[in-house]
Each structure stands twice: as C-alpha cells, then as structure tokens.
Image (cartoon, rainbow, N blue to C red):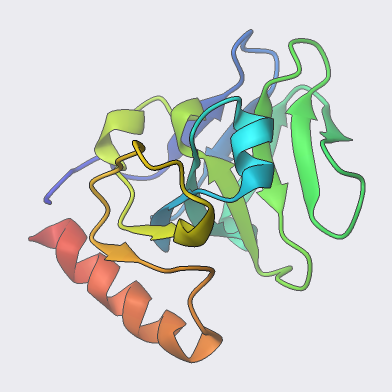
Length: 153
C-alpha cells in the first residue's frame, strides 16, 4: 500500500468549524456496510479510520451527539451537521473517525469491511479482508498486524 500521510493527521467537517487532530497513526481502516451506517452516511457504506482515543483531540468547534442516542456516541458538527467521529460503546480506548473528514483521505483506503451480510449488492470497496458482521475480538490483534504490514508494503 505504502501510503505516506504521517501524523499528526487533521480532520474537519464540511464547513470547517469542527476540527480534530490524530497524533498517532491509525490502528486500522474500515468500511462498514450495516444499515445504520448506510443511513447515517447517506451512502452504501461508511468509511472509518480507527485510532487510539489518547491520540485524538477536537481542536476547534463543538461536536454534538446525533444519529441514534444510545451506547455508541456519534458526533456531528453543531453547525453543518457532518458526521465526524464515533466513540463505540464498550471501546473507550478507540475512536472511529470518518475517513472522508481527513485532509489526506485518499491515503486511507479501507483494509477491512464489516457487515457484509447487509451490503448493497453493487457496493465495492477494494478492502483486503471482509466479515459478515464484525471480526471476533480474538482476530483483532492479527488484523492490526496485517494492516500495519499492508500499509508499509
């Protein structure tokens, strides 16, 4: 893959009022085909870079919770209402940033795709690994290792 966007990575919403920074390289990239992501992204899938929470910071603007108000907290710009990032329930150590909000979004294609059971038949991502739902937690360490190798290849 050998894409070379290096941290810190900058992200911003459509209007630019909500800005964020990621101080460390993403752990992995993903496309999610679940019905919820399809509806929230108004697309066939949502794109995500997963980063450690400790490396992520909002540097301008005020994110507001939107989408479903439940365990997963989806954050949007309070002005343009762009979906910028998600803090998944039960995984406080990570944050999912919408790939398309990154300045260098093209450098972060999806390595894995999830919820293939809900995928629209014509949607294609080019992801290397695919899962009917989400990968088992036991597989995640191997996925992170494989992503790092793929990214440097």
